[in-house]
Amino acid sequence: MAVSDLLSSSQITSLIQQATAAYQAPATALQNQEKPIEAQVTALTQVQSALSGLQSALSSLANVQTLAQRSVNVSPSGAVHATADNTAATGTYTLSGIHLAAAESLISSGSASASGTLGAGTLSIQVGSGSAVNVDVASGQSSLAGIASAIDAADAGVQATVVFDGAKYHLVLTGDDAGSANSFTISGTGALAGLSYYTGASGLSETQKAANASFSFDGLNITSGSNTITGVVQGLTLTLAASGSATVTVGEDVSALDSAAQNLVKALNQALGTISQNASYTPASGAGPLFGNIGLEIVRTDLLNAITNPPNEGTAATSPYASLSSVGFTVTSGGTVTFDDATFQAAAENNYNAVASLFGEVGQASSPNVAVQGIGSALPGSYAVSVTSNSAGTVVGTVNGEAASGTGGVMVVSGSGAAQGLALQVAPGMTGNLGTVTISQGVFSSLSSIVNSALASGTGSVTGQIGSLNTTIASMNTQISQLQAQANQETQELTQQFSVAQATLTQLQTVSDFLTTYFNQTSGGG
Image 1 (cartoon, rainbow, N blue to C red):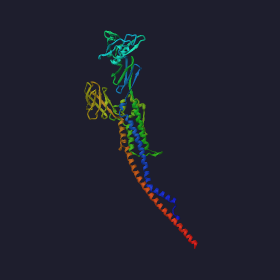
Image 2 (cartoon, one colour):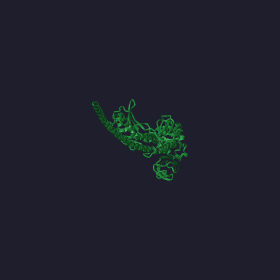
Image 3 (cartoon, helix red, strand yellow):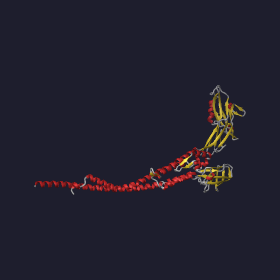
Image 4 (spheres, rainbow, N blue to C red):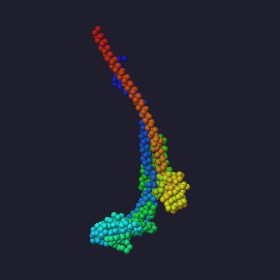
């Protein structure tokens, strides 16, 4: 074979490229095997994010009783303002014959000047049965304005001001607080004796008598030293603003619970949709990256079952709403959840606690003389309440047969049984068997268990898979790096061998050319 019959440089380069591809083939094959695993990790991460969103939505149901609100409507407006906290019973209350509480007001006879001095003296002011407060007024400060300033500075329980009626100036004294118990007297000495007001002295005139507020509340006569009245109905505060009558209606404000329910449905469908998108098969798009993933199918099924199963199986029989389907939740054939907001709001307005118990931890007492103050570590169930003594705020009894006691009218279960930590407010003086208290945990408990199990760090059905697959990818990447390094080494060795061969061929070509020229010259010279 002649030297000219050997491979050209371009042919050698092509051979090296083909050899390099062959060397890289194991790494390339491993990279191809890695792609579907990476797709699974991406899909599982999407599921993880959706479940985290559901977990966040569930957090608002952890203390579902805090979502309870009261709406208050007063008709006609103007005579009464009212507010109610979550302990107020719903209902309609009629107030009639409203008379406002008033603070006593006294006025002095007219003076031609507000700055003219009366002279030094002392004013002794006594409000109700309280201690008298002495107000010393120096001669140079004894104008009406100076006296008013001294009284205000003494904080004696009355406010002083100077008014002008168009012709004369008057000192006006008004009690700080309304109510007949806050009427006041003034004893003046020295040059201020003329400003006295008590039985037998009339240096000042009464323009407003101290008076209590009074009204009829559903036929019950109520009096109060203040125009702000609490305690007539627990949790309801009434502020009287004008004489007359009014109707106060306390209702359920279900907006917070309704918003929490809507957020739950949205987050739940997001999680279900993400699982379905990645784990299903369709003729149009084929199989998702998580198709056939048994762990995710279990999560999806459990989420749907939590909606269709009664959330409080042990207590559902006593509730007018035993399942989420009774308050507007429906699981469709496609595996999503629909929500009828109108049905939900109507149910919540009808029986807020019963609906709330479907969602989160709620305690309900069957007796109007018992209110659940705290659930503590109590497990779901119904517990009998018995009070053996109830005096001066100290309450002793049992709940579910477990010892309970406390002060301030609150009885707390101290035992380690199922009702542990349950705190009950008992009406003053009430003893004996006081019905039952029912504890519910609702769908919050079951859904939280499912989601928390799936997202548990390192061990969850979703997080565990992500961790395992990432470990596999890391191992494959190590192998790929090793194979690529080996392929590069083999390519470098092959290139070096071709380079040596090329140099040798170049030398041979030079020798060949020399010999050819030499023999051609020798042959021609002969």
